[in-house]
Length: 485
Ligand code: NAP
Image (cartoon, rainbow, N blue to C red; front, side):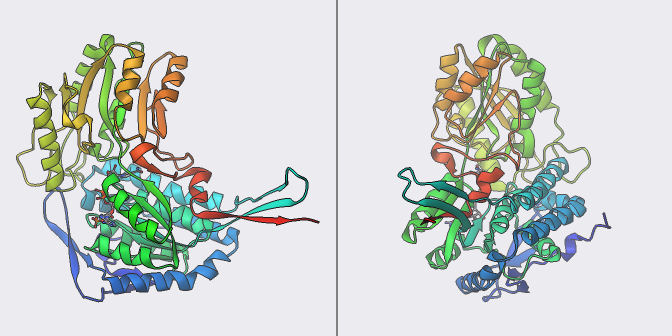
């Protein structure tokens, strides 16, 4: 590997359209802040609707050439994207930590995960196979060919600023689609740093365009109204996902939606307690709890309750909470003040309804958006944090008695992204996995994210899958040719 090239102060901050860095038509800028210090890090261009049309023009111009580029060539460019992100991993991790706040160790994990999407989809780009069969009547042959769906609008959240972008760009490019990425306003610098690496890797001009904007609704409306755009891939809250689905309906646009979660973490009496506590630390504390996959509700069988609660509180209470970039930090700040206020009010609500604080339970008295990692015991069913995403370092624990009760509690949510189950009885683990309404199950594991596996939710957690071969097919249309010979 060659020497790293990324310097934080050299990251481009203008819009990336048609392979060129351009100021916004209005000349306006958006400030970007460090959540650990509340200091301004810099600013990025604030795209207007005119800029949005220019981005669609650029994506449309590049589309025929990219769709007809040989799969092997697309694959090699994607592989090069993997190599360049890996080369610059440390600098990217620092950048993520700086603008998102997460601990550097989490940011390093994210960069490795983000890079893997390019490696995986480099491999998938040359595995786009069709199908051929004889019609049941014998009257015709059926040929099914997979073609790129077309120009894609990719909208991503701030909690994984690198990985949520590469999880969409990787399959879009492997499939032969061109795209426009709209990253979250809280974390735009990572998206531009990645865009620069993609250009260096040989992604042709206009194949990937990046727009930052303070008017996400307006910009996405203009793009989705443009009939040249054929795909929306969104990761973010269920609330915004619903707005976008309604909008996409006007143009009958193909949609993949990765939305919110409310993951149950179920611990049975017979669980391997070391594994359950280790898994809980990952499932709850990765990214400081700011993950759609974060364990949001801990359901623990009565016999395991005292040991699990005590051990989890000890581990969570010992976490070092500080500036994400500081060596030794295990939990960084939350992304902004609103996030801290939300977490604090959810904890206060649970306490007012009877929950006990085993550790944490307060905002840190210092600059930056810090909330102390917290464990709550005896959480009552009417506590608001059991019904909505906490998106912070808070673990609420609830007791249960029977397997049926655990399943009922786990399913008592409109979400269905992921569920964690700990038991030594494998048959019970699989039985409960089948009964829990969730797109993904972590059985005796604290992590499901894997570029080679289909990631996605059911119920209000979304539509479609990212990663695996499934993620590639989200960017392709099946064309059926009926013929005979
Ligand atoms: P968000 O508020 O829904 O924002 C997500 C993205 O949508 C941002 O780029 C945002 O832009 C944009 N946006 C907001 N309003 C919009 C509108 N009216 N039209 C078009 N775009 C709009 O979510 P977030 O707070 O960034 O992220 C946290 C959420 O993402 C959580 O609910 C989490 O569970 C979910 N998430 C899900 C997954 C998954 O795979 N299922 C993964 C990660 C996160 P601005 O930043 O400019 O507002």
